[in-house]
Image: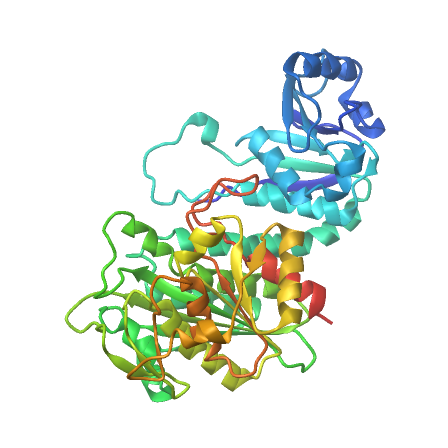
Length: 496
């Protein structure tokens, strides 16, 4: 499983590890206090080696050297932070990831947190520690053969800082967010024979240990409530569907903020069966629900001063003799009827009922839903951005800003009457698929018909929530995308 680096915070007065990490700009000069830790001969060694290796101090680049003679450490690791004019844009989370990637597993290191133009503040140090933690994650609980020696053991990192007390205080929130991201990664990475709706609900239930109120609605309750659209998706599976409601009450009586997640624990496409090639990836079709659970963990663990609700719809979409058919008509919780055109357009059916339930029961200040909803969003945005659809310019702007701040970026897509008309049905109030064209947009229009007047945003994370590209802070198939984004949204605009 994930390797949790042992992390200590100590003053800038000694080197105890086998590696010493320092930061260099394009000028390649060791910052004063880092030079004192590195010892005599370190600057000359760096200068010669940088020239030989063509190391220019570019941000996130690295140079590893044997220590100068007589030094109390084995290796000197230089990490570039770029020229002075670019350091306002330096991403400390990625910087922490770059350090973890360069050190490798099983190493003991001291990191001299001094930049060429001054010491790192407590918030920046906490972000760096977050990056270290995220990069160290790996999901290997089902591997039984021994690993390579170089891959064994957890690293130990000591951050050498000017104000240890301030950094330790800031680190608490960063560790809470890291834990939320890693929880979401674990959920997305689990195989579908292990993580089915009932098991997913049981894992969400564990948030009660952090003070989250968790309510699990079984099929009997869902039928009584009237969630027929959601239940229709799961009726072909021997696994029962579930809806989980999580509540964190950290505010002062305010209306809650609400987050809704699609949790299709495996998606065969149902009767509209998907092609076999790559179908194994459909274990990740619950990434939206995983993000919501990870976010609720983060908010509770850092004791966020906000009232928050997380609601996830958990189903398995299978093609047995009882499965929903193309041509069926179901009535959603909202009372609106839906013609099933394609049983592989199932996520919007799950979300339709859960969104309506959330806005009707909790009257939230806003709702954000996350879903690996359409392959069409990959065609439009690849894996660079999540698709953002919203009926609120204010909420969309805040999500965009949070995305830029965390690196979990979103790109706003259009909504409009012409697109909405495309999901009108001849036989029901709407159909669940309008075909190939504007597929992501018409899916969002479908969801919008189930949110009433609540400020709402839909994040289509089909390109960002699973099968992730490697980055400085993630080497996992399941990236836990969206936990940091939404935590930042709450922190910047809704806590008080």
